[in-house]
Image (cartoon, rainbow, N blue to C red; front, side):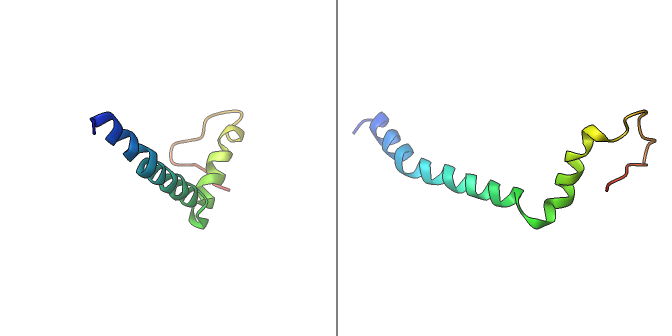
Length: 62
């Protein structure tokens, strides 16, 4: 068997499993309950400090 056939068979079977596992892990990591504050903070970036920049060390997280 030549190298291409071996690599193709490996990618078809185990590659799909590895990528699917990575995808499920990333979704679980993003949706974990402890990341809620970080997501709210990132979502509020465009809305904060409309008139002037915040003073150093004075970030407000709602």
